[in-house]
Image (cartoon, rainbow, N blue to C red; front, side):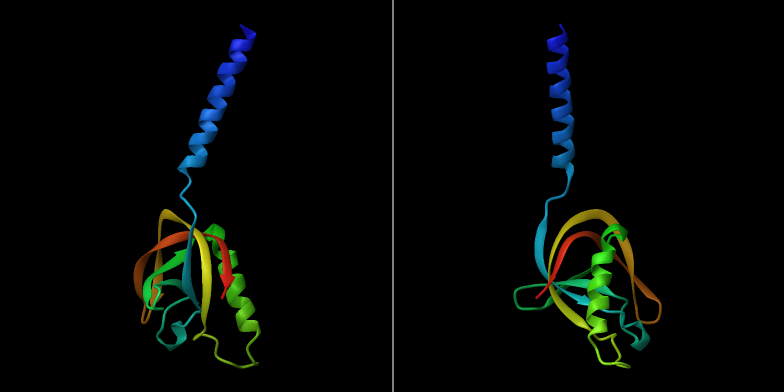
Length: 129
């Protein structure tokens, strides 16, 4: 009886673990451009834009709060390379992103307070091209 209980418990634990693993969104790798904050000249706040094979922008997204540090670290590292007193808002950093889609939405501010709802993605890895 004790052995049967152990087997049943083992099956239950494995089933629950498998469901949790399967419920995570799949990893996606895509080319993108990271844009620095360009609001001071009527542009957009820092964000990510996916690009197609021709290099055309497809859609803008934002990182989740949990993955935004990788995004901000990349921007800060690129800004640090600029000469002193150089305007950094027009940085466009080509990257390859490994990410997961989420069901979350965020607001991207562009221009004079105009806010657009965009998807939030969970960045797993960000590599500068």
